[in-house]
Image (tube, rainbow, N blue to C red):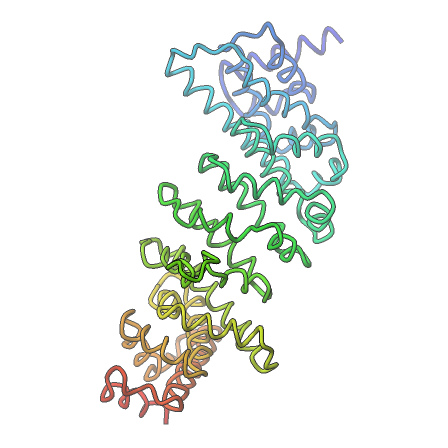
Length: 432
C-alpha cells in the first residue's frame, strides 16, 4: 500500500510539474482518489487546493479516469471538492485569488458535467441515489456554482420520459426550478435552470404540470433579461417547448397581464411581452425561436378550430385581435439566412396563417414590414438548379408550394388591396 501511494505521489508530482498527457496515462487508477482526499483535507492551503484541483480536472478529462470515477462511485467525492471550494481559506483581498477560485469552480463543474453526460452515469447513480438527493438539495442553496452543478447533473439524469415524469410529478423538482426563475439569481444560474426545465418539459404530460405551477409568468420576466442574451434565448426556447402541442399552455400565454378590465395591461398578454422581445432583440436565434413558437400556436389553434369549440374560438380571436404584429416573428424566420429549413417552416406557417381572414391581415402586416415580399416573389419564380441535391430540390419545391398556397389564400380572403395591388397581382400571376 505504501509503495502504491508512493507511485501515486510521484505520478501527481509529474503531472504538476509537466502537465503532460503521458504523465496522466502512466498514473494508477487510485490517483484521482488521492487528489480528492488531499483537496478536501482541512489542512490543505488554498495554493495547494488550487494545484490539486487543476490536477484533478486534468485527470477527469481523460476517458480512463472518467470511467474509473464512475465505476468506483467517486462522483460524490468530486462533489465534495466543489463544496470544499466554498470553505477553503482564500484571501478575499486578493483579486487574483478570488478570480482563480471562480475559475476552479468552473473547471470542477465542467468536469462533473462531462462525467454525468456519460451513458453509464444514470446506471451508477439512479434517481433514488444519495448523489441525486444531494443534488436536489443543492438546488435550494445560495451558492451559484452548486445550483448550476445540480441543474446540469440532474438534467443529465433526465434522459427518459419516465425519469422526467418522476422528477416533476412525484419529486416536484420543477417547483424549485420555477422559484429560481422568480429569484434574483445570476444569469448563469437562470440559464442552467432554464435548460433543465426544457428537458423536463419534453416528457409526456409534464407540460400541464409546469403550466399549473405558473411557469409562464415566471419565465416571462426573463424575456426582458437583456444583460444576458443567452438567458433570453433559453427563456424563449423553453416557452416554445411548453406550448408545443399544449392548448392549455397556449391559453396561459394568451391570458391578460392584469385581471382588471380597466387596466391597459388587461388588453396585453404574455404573448405581447414575447412579441416585444422579438421587436427589440438583434439576435437572430432569439427571433427564430419566437417565430417557431408563433408557428406552433398557429398550427395548434388552426387544427382545433375545426372542432368549433368555444375555447378554441376564443383563443383564435385573442390571438389576432390583441396581436396585430403576430406574423412578424414568422417573417423573421423567412428573412434569416442561416437555416434554410427554418425558412421553409416559416413559409408553411405563413400559408397556414393566411387561411383565415384575421390571419391574412396579419400576413399583410408581415409582408409590408419584414422585407418578406421580395422573398415571396423569388420563391414563386425560382427555378430549381439541376446541380442541387435531392433534399434541396424537395425543400425548394415545398417552399414554392407553400408560397402559392399563401397567395391563393390571401386572394380568397380579399386582403390583397390593402398593401400594393399591382405588385401583388404580379405575384399572383406566378401562382397560375
